[in-house]
Length: 423
Image 1: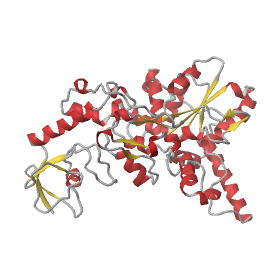
Image 2: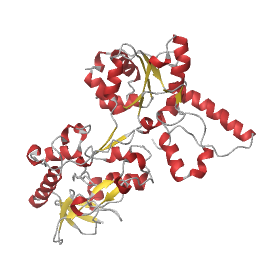
Image 3: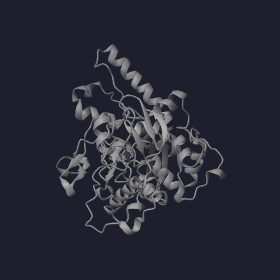
Image 4: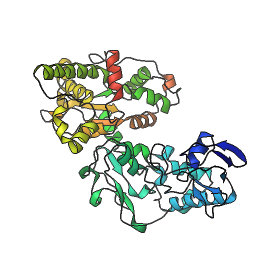
């Protein structure tokens, strides 16, 4: 199909929305509720454009492209409408909105800056809503929610969980769980995909930075850390390295510099997991056990099966995940070899998945009354720690992880890097 956009001829394919056609041509239109791969809703109206013959502005994310359509994306009427929408969204936010965990990547903040909106003038001094901190992995702050629905659609359409949805009506509408209870009592599997979808920081991971820093400053604790292999590439990108650069050696040096007594690589316990799962698989085949056998490496995947497909629970491997295997080894084998009381060891794990925060508290993840892992940091939390401590990666020399848990195979690097099915 042939369209005219801002005086320029472009082509669109059958089934395209206006926004799809515009994006393919590199024409920028702001969005908030839109997320590629999810069904369009036109909820936020930020992507409005003028279409010749239409009385009102139309949401380009949900309006189908048609042959001969004439579209205008930057008329005064369109720009004023977008600015008004941003002002209305800001007016529903608390004054500390732009001092949250998503401050630097808050899409609403970026749009306000782009359209010259006075952010401080518009904040609403309404009665704040209660923040949900019941989940071990996810914090839900309805005060920062703009009702774009991206989290709802990701949870339902991509993950197949539907733990959250729109509840109440009219001006009382919020996104919440069934009966508006805490996330911990919902069907949430702690995967964190809603956090990735949220544009404003209404959903963030539970922050464990301060408790880890407190442990680092406690001379009575022997603080060790393990890191998933995947995070060293993500951290490199976050700190300005060329995308794809693996800063593993520099990251290990940085972890030692901020005070960790030992730095271990989770890839080695990924090797162990492969061996243990292979052994269990052989036993199941030879003993005519339950098949097929599913990996147990992702706690989000395990909880998903437990809640929605309990008939497949016997198919899940009995092995712990690489994170938990290494955590158990650190407080048993390593403690014995180093002559350290396991109760004085504070074990930190750095993982790319919020569900790992949930996993450490699951039954069976303790020994002698002590958790295998004491705290889990996400990749984003670790970057915050590096910045808080003023770590400059350009001044560091690459270092190796500590033995006996610093050696691994390439398979361990790959297996440990994927983190499991749901992550």
